[in-house]
Image 1 (cartoon, rainbow, N blue to C red):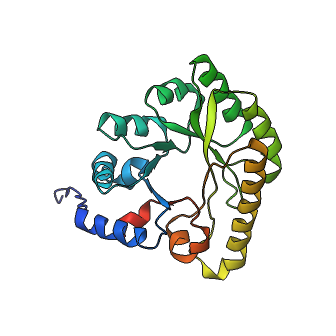
Image 2: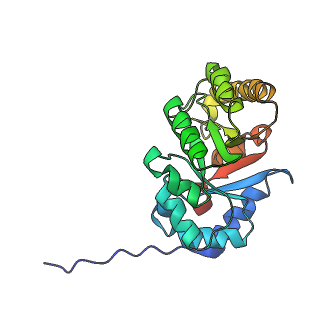
Length: 229
């Protein structure tokens, strides 16, 4: 039997910087950049990647789960970290590590409001996710009044951003669909801000959205696998 060979993955940080700089060059000066390092940096080393990107002055990070965010904090990441799929059992840990949850349905919203209140938080930063076509996670357009009603009844949290995700921004044959997503998101954002009484940050673009839909860069963009080329 031939001896099994060990698989080795090398990450060229110079290439990572090149990709980061290229994507940043597509943005207006006021648009922030969020680096997605979920799945432990897409199977690389999220902590090393995040520390390098923090040194390059990325504005935000995102992870899938709370434990990934805790690992980044323990490695020295001080920039804001959005947790895309937080679970109620981890909410106290999330707060203790200054991580910011995505609230994407009524159960998660209500559970987090309960925990934030119990932990005596004031204006804790949260992010509200809306579904505009990916149909994976997120509130619907007609949930705006329900969400803002809940939020206006508490001082425990404050909405840092509202966001959505483009389903087919890499496929220019689906341009009509993507533009409709962007239009729907802008309507949601307008109604949300008007009802809540302030304007949170807006973000919807993934890597292909950054490249193909500059009109939708808004306040922040997100890139994950695109940073790796």
